[in-house]
Image (cartoon, rainbow, N blue to C red):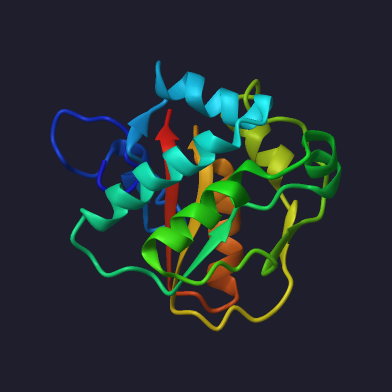
Length: 185
């Protein structure tokens, strides 16, 4: 799908995006969430392998550069709740976004958004439970002042989290929200 990057036999808009268009404008991901990409992302996310953030971030930046479209004005990581950041020791989306922003010579806006609620992990929830879990979990901390931004995360599964954030960004005046992720499930 040209909008959500779900695999399809032809480049088109998938039935889900046709019926219920997401608030983000597109998803760009160099990998599908299968081995070996799934292993690399798990090692980054759960095993503190920061070297992988660099390698995955470079792969993501190269994918973005080769798409042939103008770059957005800024890069934003999906925010992690302070409790999760403290427990894990870092926010993997921020680590990736830092590499991508540097590779593409774009500003990194790491403090423009906050995660205000500590939510359950999304990986074991169905679509409706994911929407309830993530509802009102984020807020914008200032006026973005950008026309277009890229929202960076490690993996997009159902797109619930990035859709929620894209809606907030668009309510605050951002016109184009691209989602850049290392992998698409």
